[in-house]
Length: 448
Image (cartoon, rainbow, N blue to C red; front, side):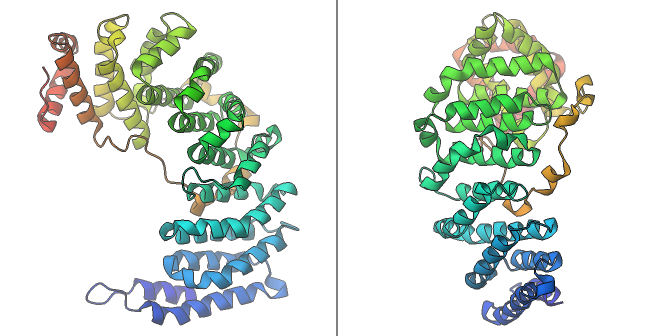
């Protein structure tokens, strides 16, 4: 009842749309609620009462930054409870709400005070090390997610040494055999890639990361995790570190494509190729693929980009694809004067359809033959912490409108190749030309 009262009071506004209660007035009510809830958890018959733990979590969520004054008393009780339940993890819902509450506390405090991440690390790292050493399987996916959350709040380039010492353990094959670990582990390795790329390279662990990618990409259930990891690495590792492995990476991708082609895999592969074109260059994308087999990029254009582009969904993914295709159309002589010129108009038409037409939700035959061993278990889903989720990264924040990006780049191409752009555009269909004119008018762009 106190939690219901607290929510109602927090929602009440006066005529000036200000909260009815000030922080000072709210404090006794919040203190009473939290004292009572933690008091129940101290009773012998209610030490792992999932409803009480859920109420504590919801109180933190309701109070948000107003809970900070109470964390000095609450966090020691929560850590003590974690150490207690780790001896016998018998109540999965209680444990889940407990880890959600830790996630909330970290988010709330570190949102306004980045330096506070160190305090949480000091409190939680020794406990987490114990959980990992004891191999408490029920807790390990939670530990990885909270470690990821802590790393993501750590200033870039200043990852503490305990994380670096943990890295060899994270790359151990045995951890990757458990389905519940895979998504949290990928997230944690991705956090390492963002925050500690120089240390990974210095410790010669890049091969371990690529080994994880190779394992994930071979699995129909987990290939999307492999793509997430390799795209994060491409974004954050120095180009000179990854360049020697590009051909091997692409070979693995094509090997999986030839052995089993699912809709999910096709979509992720298109996004990856476009991300590569944006990060490195469209020319390098073509040369890397043609380096595996002569004229192979023609098959990629025909069978992937032109045939399957419409299947890509998701705002960030669609922006990456639009920008990658634009780079191919406008930055790559092989496309507008060279070997692949015959595909230029088809690719532009595919991109315009991508902008204008509904997403293609049809599926491929291999979608219906997922291996039983690859099927995610209930534990995989149930171990996901909502309050530890990371915000989806947009690697192209500087591009607000992909259609504008297209016509601006076409205009630049027209300026650098006088007379060629009108010829290229004239080979597209009437609908494509009409829509391009609309884009130009909308964004004030003149195509030479």
